[in-house]
Image 1 (cartoon, helix red, strand yellow):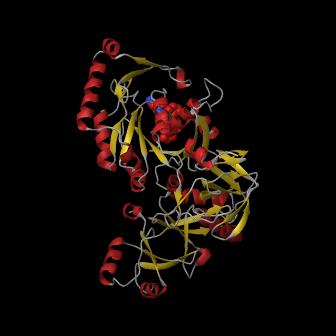
Image 2 (cartoon, protein in one colour):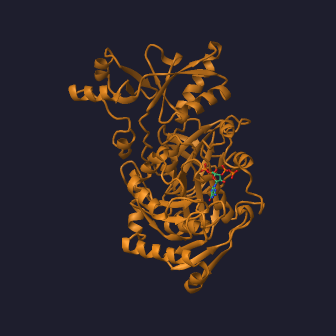
Length: 532
Ligand code: G4P
């Protein structure tokens, strides 16, 4: 049997995060191309419409909108390593789903559009990485088109996210006139050549500085000046700062033409951390070579209409996972048979026999498994819960056809368990008119779509005037209930949640009656401060 610690050392498990349209899908495909995992050679990179339905978009809603809402996992070998690429939802709303995927990744690649820099609607996503001290590699994409100045982009990253962007490569040629990059580690000029539609690996040529000066003229001298300036500014790679999420090695490229893709993928292998021992709830790292353990970071029902089942995506944290082993579900203490274990990528499923730390296993029919739950073998362990964000959007859901109430109730509780939305109930209206709470409004669209299409329960959503939620207890709830502008709702786990119409009103109440228990829903987590 293979040694799990040695296998873990070969794993690079990361997510690509970006603004919509910055190039995440294109880069994902190019990674597959460089990893030799994209079959078909030239022309395999399909037009947007086809491509989106062919790769990670399996949900009808995603296809209608041409966006990727759900995450998938792609695994491929590269050099002597195994790459696990976790796909994050690609829409502008921040959603819980993205955050959960990040909890399962060891590093992230942040893709920016060279012409747009940091876009405000996805700033939160990058702040989350920073708050989690997640090692972040930056790819400044679309350098083949006119864009901002390189230094301006670096400055923007530092100002807006608070992470130092340290270029590992530096472009030769301004945005729109991209010739290649200087690899600052070796001082070499790597010149790229376009291939038709970027369907094949871009030929690269290492050019001596003297020849580069002759052949590239002003573009070369400007790039050399830029590199000198970076040196004076001290913008150099620093492993410790990178691993602590303070500094982001930065690469310039163009995913469309494949320029810089190899250097970036090599950096993921060379710089990003391998799967390491995960701390348990008490902060003790679970050794990689102890028995199997993992946690679910995503649960998804009905991925495959023909099957109508429920898959839990489990990130392996220690040991060797072998299909068929009977593990323990930490929250319930019940045994869980893993006969139906899959490698899940898009809508494709393949039976998976073994997996190691850093890998993701899709467990079918994981009825009781919820997001954040731990599974273990032989030696018990429980990994920390994945904190959820304080919801900022609240809507009331009602079934359109009362004859479908049973289906509605079932669907609502399923979506609640999956964490698609949080479901809050008022004591008077209960399941008739539950309040759906979300971090981003897209979560509502997904809920409505799934209630109608999977559960046969078309619903009507009506807005509420709530804007902020706090966790409370029975005695504070008794004080809050008679007040105007506040309601006390309950969650399926029994928690009492006070929802307020205005955060100003909440602040005043906290100042006037400090004895009231009104905790942030992400109490104790660093992300609490940025969740509003
Ligand atoms: P996303 O997943 O982050 O949303 O972005 P996606 O890869 O779908 O890319 C968005 C658009 O940007 C696509 O164009 C894509 O071709 C283009 N793009 C991606 N990388 C580069 C690049 O390096 N240079 C240039 N010039 N364009 C790039 P589209 O017109 O929306 O779709 P398509 O018809 O080209 O597929």
